[in-house]
Length: 138
Image (cartoon, rainbow, N blue to C red):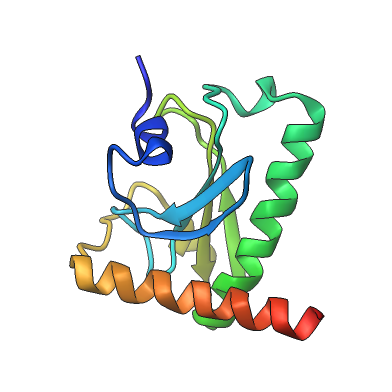
């Protein structure tokens, strides 16, 4: 049975996408710890991150690094935190969360309840930041 993330990839379920390549997708977490909380996934459905082929594993982290740069620009913070838990959805994924303190990466704390408009605005900020980064590199 396809995971919810596979349904997002196929377009069956909408998502607030911030970046996409042929192999990877980054979109906002709908139950975020902070504004700008993004999930980065491989498009190939794989339940366990460490089951990815080496090239795909490395590619996912490089893609996540680029997305993290956009998050940091869009949501100024001390660092973009990284978490890989893998228990809540049966599809490998990386959480990227803007942070100013360690306690902000506590998945046991109450999540934000953002409106669709707030999520759309957050996604737009990250996409614009990524576009700025891309322009500066060229």
